Image 1: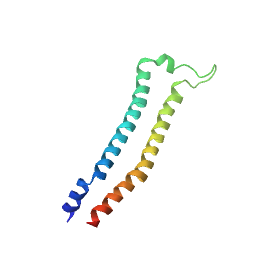
Image 2: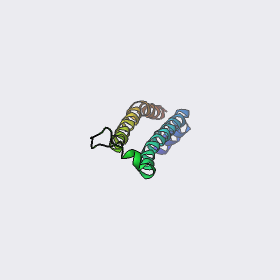
Image 3: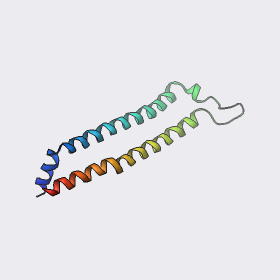
Image 4: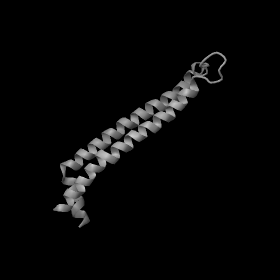
Amino acid sequence: MNDDIVARIEANPKYHELVSKRSSYSIVMSILMIIVYYGYILLIAFNKEWLSTKLAPGMVTSVGIPLGVGVIVFTIVITNIYVRRANTEFDEMSAALLKEANKK
């Protein structure tokens, strides 16, 4: 019975659409995260002088601190965006696929 349902799901064009959308969205989000994270690491490696520049005269905080916090905040935001889309669009598509597969 389960093999039959799996076969029907895999044969459904909506399944391939779901896999394609989810995969491409995941790749885009991953690339964005890699760019931000490794960009920050590359700044640390190759431009320490700029990162150590004080935000204002007499301040203790340098440019690197808000950028580091920005990387963390970006990670939280991008994760939230992905989870919201996964819990709405992707889950709805999955539920529709299962409903169609169980009808037959």
